[in-house]
Length: 116
Image (cartoon, rainbow, N blue to C red; front, side, top):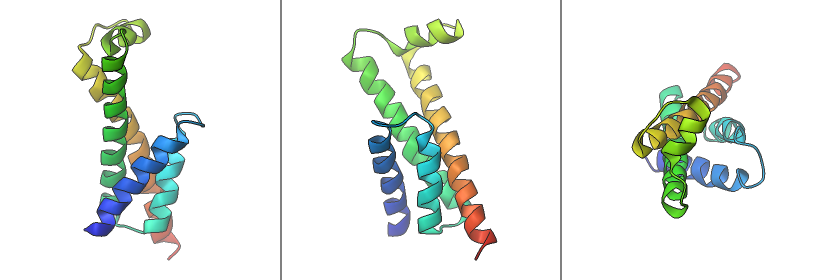
């Protein structure tokens, strides 16, 4: 159980730091590399990365929405042309990050299973 919490924390912290310097898709590489290092089960790898990155991106989009005058729903309207409340915009950004990172971690877990 401690290993899973450490896994989630490692992905969250490394992704937050790496996104300061690299593009958004670096979360996939970080989830893959951390999954290779921790060697967890496929389900736990996917769910751990999903939870870490969902919370990271959802929390960060909430922070941006509350700290600036522009609301996240207005930005989504500009991109998609669909009016969404702020909560739905947080969920969408969290889901994009969670699924992307979860798939990266799943690939890392499958590679570990294949070569061990």
